[in-house]
Length: 111
Image 1: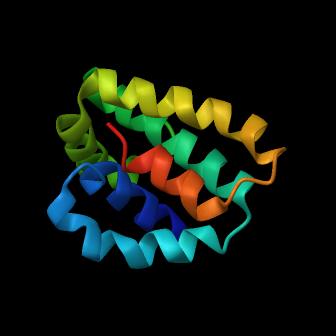
Image 2 (image 1 turned 30 degrees about the vertical axis):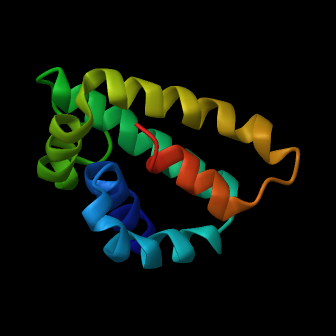
């Protein structure tokens, strides 16, 4: 549950530079978790955020609908799609032993 809440916060506030001090502990904590699990959960959240952006109900994370809507407003549908694309590519990058923290930074802190 903590991973899910952290990922939702990254989706919502990851593009705000002023939020970085608050997000840094979340990134550090997630970097210690199995990267594939974090990426899979993030992709699920992103898909639900895209659904809320289209006016649909989230499929999996219904209890996070307000946060997912906020993430959609913050990133826009195009930004959420770019995030989903990067998340879909992430497992291939994990083959090359990338630094998990740098991977998370690239996924969530880049528009």
